[in-house]
Length: 144
Ligand SMILES: [Zn+2]
Image: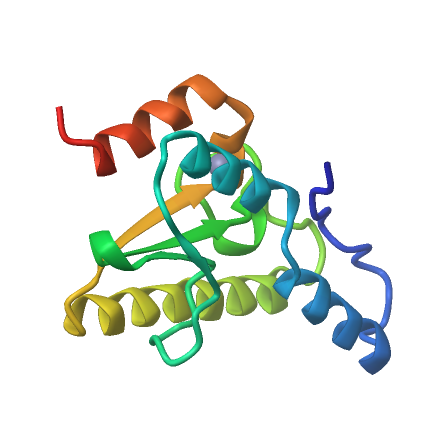
């Protein structure tokens, strides 16, 4: 399972490297695969990264009009999560970057809600507890 690590903070920002990082971030990551497997196991039909929707959500369940984002805790600043650490150097650079990420997430979510979608966020750390995550997805989608 791949999980993104905080970058080496002493590295200069290399354009090629940041291009690769961006494409890696867009690729289907381990945590997203976990969510897909669970949804599949619950008999829920979904689509991936449907363009044309605001914010290009990672997973879309058209029937439930629900968009799912699978967020890395570090990059997207999972509130109260031990993985959302602050680097010790270049603090200003990182906090601005994180603020932008968080703001972008808020904007995406709002745009989807405005378009009549429900938005569900699954945090990377939640994909480590299959039971809890199954419950979360089940209660979001499966009528009892
Ligand atoms: Zn987390």
